Picture (tube, rainbow, N blue to C red):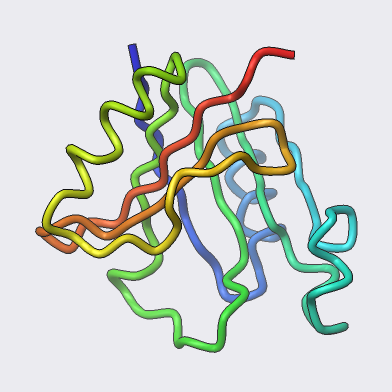
Amino acid sequence: MATINPYLQFDGNCDQAMTFYKECLGGKLTFMRIRDTPMANDMPAENQSKIMHANLSADGITILASDRMDSAALVRGNDVYLMLYCSSEEEIRTLFPKLSAGGSNKTELKEEFWGAIYGDFIDKFEVRWMMNWDKPE
């Protein structure tokens, strides 16, 4: 069964925000910075220390986050996604076309360097979604 977690986007202060949430909620916090990914060579110098992905897990709570990489202004409404973690490849390949029907796809489902199948879109009600299935190692 899939699970849904909030995915927050920040304007360059993801590490400070997530560290604050960890101080408040406890738990385990991990960061993946752009400079530590295969994307590093394709990104400008000012983005190298930005957070590509942060994960805070504490007592049944999971908050996911990243810094915005594009030049679009961060405004209320484009700063939160629903992250749907799927439990199987079949589930992600079944749910993605259903949820994205009538919406606008930003990233089609594809295998990603972090070992997952991933895609994202804005649904027909303008809700932002990310979908991920971690492939077995």
